[in-house]
Image (cartoon, rainbow, N blue to C red):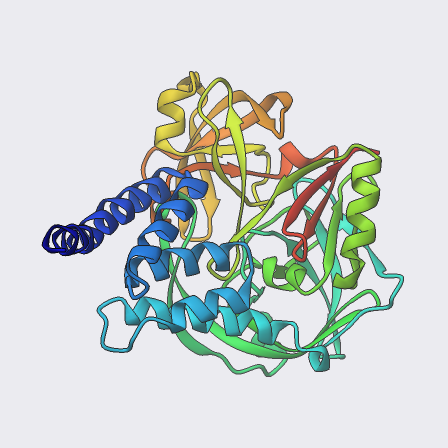
Amino acid sequence: MLKALSSIALACSLLPALSTPARADADADFTKGDWSAAQSGWSIALQADPKNAAALLGLARLALYADRRPEAERLAGSIPPSDPLAPKAAALITEAKRREADLDPANLSVPSEGTRVPFALTDPLPVLKVRVNDKADAFFLLDTGASEAVLDPEFATELGIASSAAGNGIFAGGKTAAVRTATLDSLALGAARITHLPVKVVPTRGFKLDADHRLDGIIGTGVLYRFLSTIDYPKGELILRPRDASADFERKALAEKAIVAPLWLVGDHFLFTRARLNDGPERYFNVDTGGAGVGVMASPATIADSHVTLDTAHAGEGQGGGGMVKLVPFSAAITLQGVEQTGVPGMYTPEGNQYGIFPFETGGSLSHLYFHTHALTFDFVAMKLVLEKP
């Protein structure tokens, strides 16, 4: 009996010790981009200690990345307010609720058959003609590197829209710039309409894509999130459909052998999928369609281990949201879901790493010229990125 009790006591004493390496390994797996292993490690740690706040937060974070909002809220809500990780848990819950509010049907309408918004301009980046507050037509850039939507401050003044300070944003090359926020009464894109839309107020009219289109704002990921959204580059149009068209769309995409890749939503607008640059390791790449003249941007780690040859003889500068940044061109192959596309024009910003803001290893960004020959669909119900060729 004494021996049995000693064995039980020994087993119980080992449980906390076992959970710590499991969580530590999961933390490391998450940082290096092995989220499947991280989820397994955090789950094991939670079995050993159901109150393990770090494991709860890690699993909540992965759930939110996959846009499983109720699960993310439940896990983060299990962390007591007195825990040191409580502020991070609260921020995660706030983001989950913000996304849910974006889908409020009272502020959203689109015909069941969808709507098609023609591009006023396709290159160097897509530009749409939209209607703001039911009283002004405007040209907005289409860019998944932006959050909800962006309004130029001069345009906001012309419309009598008040704004308030909202800190700094991080842009290309890791540079920062002041950001203000406001709310649009309405934004109409073809027959789709969003009311009470939060927007960032950042200068856009200084970006000259051509002589005929002054950019009054930007359509970002937060707008696309409200729909089943397709950026059809070959046809030159944005297609917005109800989110509940997801199942039919995915069946069709599978039947037509489209490229279908997992999609993750990090923070309020950063989209990620897994891809490979040249012969380097597969990494998470940010899907940022707003890179003019660029198909891919690479992080320092990706440049280092993917046999990228930088064309330093043709280095130059470009305009980012935070100012001018040094740009070094290169050309590389991108592999997504086993499909390789060669000769993708790339850019590297050696003076700052904008990907350092993420808590996991990031390969870089996939941008305009990589997607240029496809219809690119963001399915936020299935959490899939779908590329179809005409």
